[in-house]
Length: 484
Figure 1: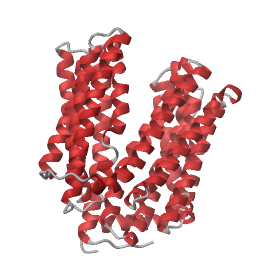
Figure 2: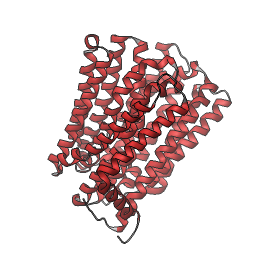
Figure 3: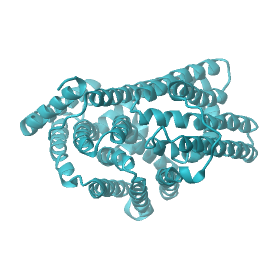
């Protein structure tokens, strides 16, 4: 499967993907380092106060830009009326949301008997105004295919926000330090995006001009809401069925694989979306196929080895209190990896104006997860996890099929490209289980067993897919150099 891109397109694509990967790794490292520091400086009470404020803000954040920012990346920058209308619409809607959330802060403060809560919510509400003035410059950067500045904004906002949080926490600001971290992150992104891509809006406003983006944005927002509400209901039902301790184990079992898979998949999704906006479909199809295969080569062995080693890794890292999460993670992790690989289809679908397809597939995934949890009292926690996994398999099939119907890509070819990574990953986990001594769990023994499993994975790949591996290396070399 050979393809050739224009020289500028090659370098831009590689820069975007690399910048997104670096930003993702940097954010993960900073957040992991910051967590124990802030936990020591604040304590449970201040974290609890912030936790009361954040869910309301997070819910309205899902709605704030109406998905218009992501859709506008498909609009020509010369369409002044569209961009100006979008600016005034977002500024007005985000201002209204900020007022509503601030008012809800007073209600939450009275209900929870926390007099500081309204002020914290009011500070967090400033983020909606910052989102409004950042959305259009961010969309222009995506339109231009410049995700490097997006990544720079993410890293800078994370670093500056973390610094502000620590300084305020040292001064005894408590929960205010976490709220300031949240808002400062939006301030930094707003400054970087507007310096890079600000265009003065005119006073024109025509809702009919922006309607196609409102419609597409509605599908994006619907997808976000379907996932957000579905997860909230899922946790509520799971907690009612099995109790708070089991819910804690289930939440952790979902958070870890989701965090890992999104960290790997999101940078590729962003680069693929920007690429699909700028390139002809004949150039997008082979890039998507290669990236799907490459992501599977990374995520599937990681998921297989972490699934096999979960009892040892969790025992060492988390202690015996979290043993209930081990079996759930072993079931869920491979399905999350499949979800991340299939989710790359969404970038191509959205670039082709098929946001509605994303909404229905994600809604189906949420419905499948809820059905599995509803059956929980009769089938048990591990069967619920298997049901959630089945929902993810159905989602993956739906995404591949929908992409084929939309673009003419062959879903069978994409699915066949996953066969060898799956087989090699299964072999790697089998080798790990043969090497590890479950009666003598140590960091050294676990690490050596993981290395043996990964070595077996590489051997199977070389035997079964050496030509494809050479093609991938050749593809990456062509993308990274001029004049191929």
